[in-house]
Amino acid sequence: MYIITGLGNPTREYRNTRHNIGFDAIDYIARELGVDVGTKKHRALIGKGYLEGEKLILAKPQTYMNLSGESIGDMIHYYKIVPREGLIVLYDDISLKPGQLRIRAKGSAGGHNGIKSIINNLCTDEFIRIKIGIGEKPKGYDLADYVLGYFSKEERENMDLCVKRVYEAVKCLISDNIQKAMNDYNQSMKN
Image (tube, rainbow, N blue to C red; front, side, top):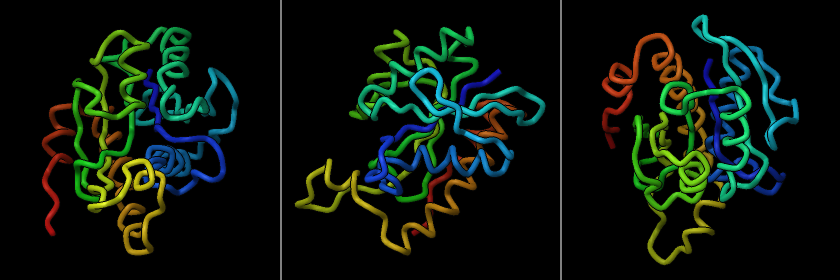
């Protein structure tokens, strides 16, 4: 069984912001699988389904980004998941070009407060993560304003294609292994 969780902020004003691309990816996966991510449990919106023959929980923590680990910790303990084997976290990364993916089996928070919260709550940095590039903030921009800002129309179209690639990467992780997923999806973007 897998818990696949996207990171984001729960209220309407954050919908479609750069910081909520993890929620967008969960929404795309849910549509593809015909899963309703609407059940309130573990301080998250969750939905249950199957992918590649494996049972999974799709989750969007409702604790706000900086406290994501509280919700995810609840789910990990309730479903008795070993994080390094069954947790996949989808989230935004400003160090990657918009739409670029980077899959990792473990690592530091890299300045991302949602990941920092997960590491602190789980007491491990060993869990699969798919970083979704949103691009560097422009010079002179405040980081919070940038990540909480909206994609341009062109960027949004690119990100809509990107969440499809996230879904394909998740399928690869589940049906094959992390090494194959990293080989197939960690390629640099051309631009």
